[in-house]
Image 1 (cartoon, helix red, strand yellow):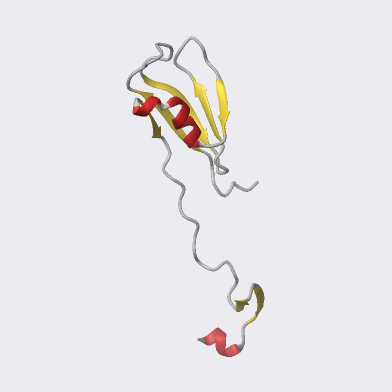
Image 2 (tube, rainbow, N blue to C red):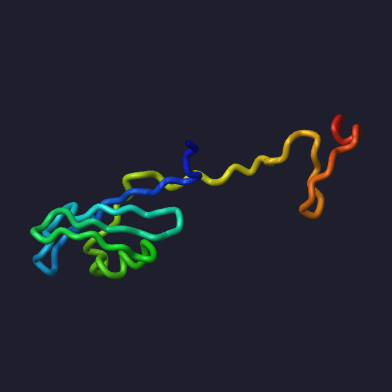
Length: 109
């Protein structure tokens, strides 16, 4: 079984001040951002525990950030950039999106 090209990235929602009095302070939820941008948030530190799905991390910040009183703290590092090395085997040249065999002169260059 092969691994996915990019795994989901985890984060914690850290609240410095609880303006609602419901979730408390410190880490109040954990989340996951998927390669598509879709984000889940699981509330874990109050009497009411739930899981919600958002279109992107910006929605989580807008809804639950409370003007900077709550912040996203990433657990996993950002994804590594895609490699820029050619994916074409030696001896092939790509011109205008089509692969063709390289000539002997191109192979020795």
